[in-house]
Every structure is written in C-alpha cells, then in structure tokens.
Image (cartoon, rainbow, N blue to C red; front, side):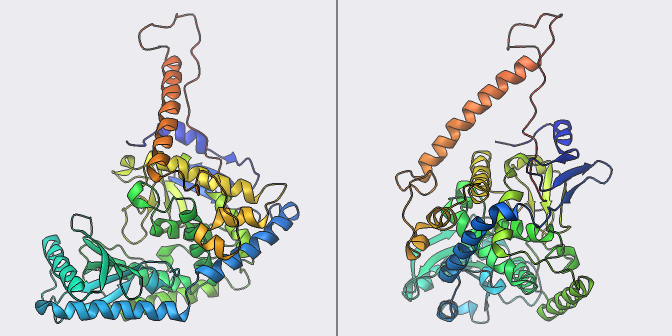
Amino acid sequence: MTCAASSSARRESYASRRCSSGMGRVVYTGSADVMVVDAPDMGFNMVELAQSYHELEKCTKDILSIIKPTEDDWNKRLHAIQEIVNSVHLVGYLGDAAVKPFGSFVSNLYAKSGDLDVSVELPNKYGFPTSKETKQDVLNELMMALQIEGVARDVNFIPTARVPVLQYVSNHFGISCDISIDNYPGQIKSKVLYWINTIDERFGDMVLLVKEWAKAQNINDPKNGTLNSYSLCLLVLFHFQTCKPAILPPMKEIYDVSITEGSGRFNENSLDQICVENIAKFRRQNIGQRNQSSLSHLLATFFEKFCHIGTYSSDHLISTYTGEMKRNLYWMARSYCLFVEDPFQRPENAARTVDMLELRRISRAFTRAKDMISSDRGSDRNELLSLLCTPEVGSKLGARATADRYTNPAMSPQQHRFTELMEYLTADLHRNQYDQRARGSTGSRPVRSGRQAAKPYQSQQLNCPQM
C-alpha cells in the first residue's frame, strides 16, 4: 500500500502555517524545495507545565537509572564477542577473519536490554565486495559452530534479508546477538554516532528514553511495520538539530560521506580525526550559545514536534544530513509512507519498514504522549511511567499496571493490526465517498450542472510545532 498524496494539496497545507500550539511554524519555500523549520521559544508554557515537568524530570531520571548499562553489562558484551571469536576460529577458512562490534554498543547508545551487533570481516586482499552468497555460506557455517560450542539458543538465520544476518541469544550471558558479514556501513555509522554522542550527553539519554517509550507503545518493531531503532535515533538527532539554539549540527558538518552496501574497509583513524576536528569547529562557532533545556523539556518538545508525523507524507523527508525537512526528490519516494533520510547512505530511507496502518498508530502514540505531558491537570507518576517505559522497567520503579491499548497484554500484535486495518478501511471508505462527491460523481450518476460541487478532500494539515 503506497502513501502518495497530491503534491499541490500538500504544498498548500505546508505553506506558512502557524501551528495551533503557537510553538513554531513550518514554511514551505517552493524555490529552494525546503521546508524551513522554526523552532519554538524554549520557554513554552513553562509556568503552566512547571509541576508536570518536575514530575517528568524525576521519571526520566528514574527510568535512566534502570535502563542505562553498568560496567557489568559492558563486560558481558565483551565476553559475548569473545564467544563469537572462538566460534569463528572453529571454521577453518575463517582463521584470519576479524570480529568487530558495531551498532549501539559502539556508539554508546545501548540500553541494558539492547542487542549486540557484530560484523565478521573476511580476509580480502584484493578489495572486491563480498557477494551475498558468500555471506550466506559463512553465516551458515558460523551458525553450526555456535551451536556445536553450546553458545547459542533461539537461533534465527535470515539469509534472504537485505543484509544477511544470524540472530541468537547467548546461553551464558542472555544477550541477543546479530551477526553479519563485512558490515562496513554499519561500522562507519556507529563510529560517527559515537562522536555525535560526545557533543552533548543529553543526546544519548534522549535516545535511550525514546527507544524505551517506543517499546512501551509497541512502535519499535520494524518486522511489524513500525520504526526501527536507527530511525528513532535519527528522529532524536533531528530534534536536537532543530532546537533553538541547536544542540547538534547537521551531519554533513561532522562527517560528509555517502556509503554503499558494497563499501569496503575504511580508515578508522582518519574518520576519528575528521569528526574530532569538525566537532571542535562546531563548538567554537557556538561559544556562549549552549541550549540549556532540561531533559524533560527536550522530551516533551520531541513529542510535540512529531505529533503529526502521520501527515508528513513521502513528498517530504526528514533530513539529519542537512538538519531540515525538505522536498523529497528521490525517485522511489512514493513507495514509502514516511521518509527519514539515512545521512550516511543517501537516498536510503531509514524508516522504509513503516507501513500506512502502523504510521497511524505511531502518530497516535506521539499525540498521546504530547497530550499527557502538556495536560493542564498534569500527570501523576504512575501515568508517566506507564506511558514512558515498558511494564518490566515500570515494575522496578513501583508503577502500577494500566490497561490501555498499548500495554494491555490481552491484545496481541495481530489484534492490534486488525483493529488498525478496520479503522483505516472505514476512514478510507468515507474519504473515497467524499472524493467522489467532490468530483461531482457518486460513481454512476452525474451532478447537475447548476449545482456547486463540494470542495475536494485535502489531507490533514501539517500542524507540527517547533520544527
């Protein structure tokens, strides 16, 4: 199901509209093909929301105290990596292969319960890209070695994935591991995000909080049409780029590169040097302009910023490469419901797994969070914990279980999707009937010539503040 919409209608809806909350505005500039995002006044509603923010700040700190990894969690991952090294050596022709972690572990954006991503680098003296068939064969051999060693349980080999991957849980350490072959793009992304994370510690905390909230709302599951962790990380990055003053720079100012799936080995020392120099330059340019917002305020404005994410359409993309929302000129844009540009692999879409049914639920999750946090009556601790963290984490903080559509165990993911499908089909039916009336037709009978047709249906206006 594609998500294309009328470009003219979209342009009208984006044109110089003041947001309903008064927190910012979005301006479409046709000549530059860029949506200029005005960030909000950083003091928005602070008087009315002071009490709510105080409780939110306490909840975020408590949640982080549970989900942030300890030294023991770090060591467990190192041991899990060593298990893979030992298993690789059991496969005779892999004796010279290197085992390198990447992903959130390397970028230091991982939670206690997070997966461990590992790339096995094959000897390649000629520098040719490793074929997908070779990667599949190596992973199959490695899977047998891990099982022989008694290392792995819950093994899931996905050879036909875009990047073939071997997934399992370490028997000894209980860590979920994903192994791929020659995943140089993943290593580059992880290392750059590590350096981004050193600019401001609030970024790493926000990524952990947003991922925990997304898990609690069941919208962090790409297999079922929602957001993957990487796209959530990019949304947080975009938020930090578009605050006033900006907390983080556009990615092109830190490490301007476009990599492909077939990219080979890279010079890690050179990457580090480039990032360090560009970060120092960013800091010099922003002396005396540091954004002083609390973590709770950044989290609240994050939900406010993306509460209408369902209306963005594939005609526009969220670009952390340039730090702006802009017209989507990529040829494959119309096949996606939501486009979050991968700053390292343009024009790849980091949110390509999102489908229309789940996008509606994602949008409602953002809106629900925004409404609860900005409620005039305020939110108590139990409500906030039920919103922001999974029952497992909430129980450790004394939260009482709540029965809502996101955390209710009585409703399975399949039932959620069926409910979403019925809602979508019902809305789509009414919309189609309205479109037919607007065109002067009910499907078979023409409208009388002297009668004025109804205004054509227009998609919901983008009403998103503080971009």
